[in-house]
Length: 135
Image (cartoon, one colour):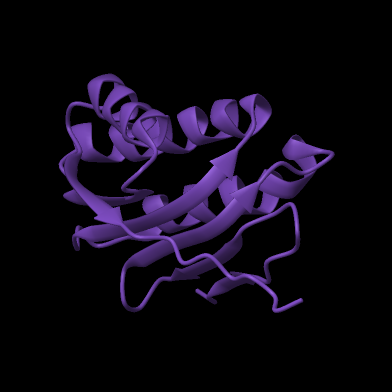
């Protein structure tokens, strides 16, 4: 099975799903104009990956600094697929990286954890760097 790599844009996250390393990574912002179109290959790849796997632990690294409500729904679907796999005996570890100054981002991760109790979660605060241009 091939890796899934989607380069980041201004409104979509970087996606790297590596079946050999058993790591699923998304990083950046998620507010695409057409959320269903953007996430369709993500869900198709994940479904195929989870069906073909040998039971190895899956590590999910998420660092989404911003996502809109339609992306939130896509994330819920993503976690539902992972929860189903975990309930079938698959070990899934989620590293939820969030801006340490953004309580809402932490709360979103905690809500996803509540909805997916079979997944192991690490909540990892990060300091986001500000890049200011010299005038």
